[in-house]
Amino acid sequence: QVQLVESGGGLVQPGGSLRLSCAASGFTLDYYAIGWFRQAPGKEREGVLCINSSGGSTYYTDSVKGRFTISRDNAKNTVYLQMNSLKPEDTAVYYCAAAKFLAPCYRRQSDFLSWGQGTQVTVSS
Image (tube, rainbow, N blue to C red; front, side):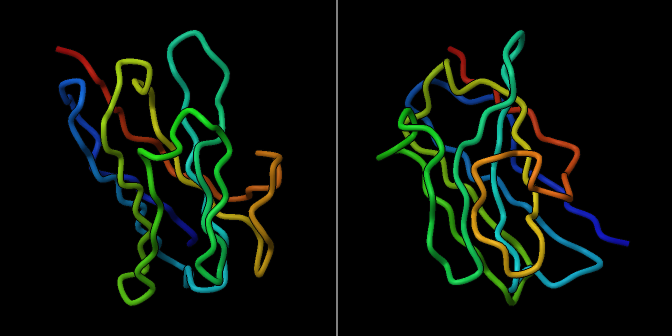
């Protein structure tokens, strides 16, 4: 059974950092692009960052450039989202999702086939 599980969310003060994890089971992440998305209250879900099977990254929003990075550890079958200098506007439920086998980092969310359940990130003082 293909499954993605996010973890690492929580409450953090503005300017703080969090590292989210996206752990896969039922398949090997090595050959899949993994994207991070987020949905803030009352807003549509938006793309944040994606990492392809070769390790290249794609930013979906300029608002996180210079603050968020994405990485993968294939040995642990896990993708990470490192979030630094967090702002209140980063508050959202964060989801990871997998594209199809050997596919690139798509722009359309509908091209990501497997989704995790999400983890809450709250940035507040």
